[in-house]
Image: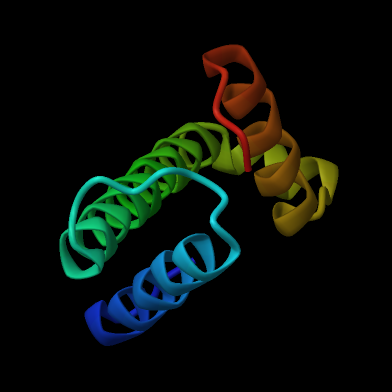
Length: 93
């Protein structure tokens, strides 16, 4: 999923605010520092998913003729392949 930097920042700010408001953890740093780190983690996760998507596209592209011959649904194959790779790598989608 693609999110703009602004959207990631808003999401991180909201998470930091909720964590602070609900006292879910003992926060030792200022909220803006916590929000920035949360944003970095979200961005890293989105980048990892994008790399996974690109790998799945490459795998399916290498089997393009068989997919076309068999009349398989590309979207379904994409999701199944992505889920399999994610599971093998311990990546939670």
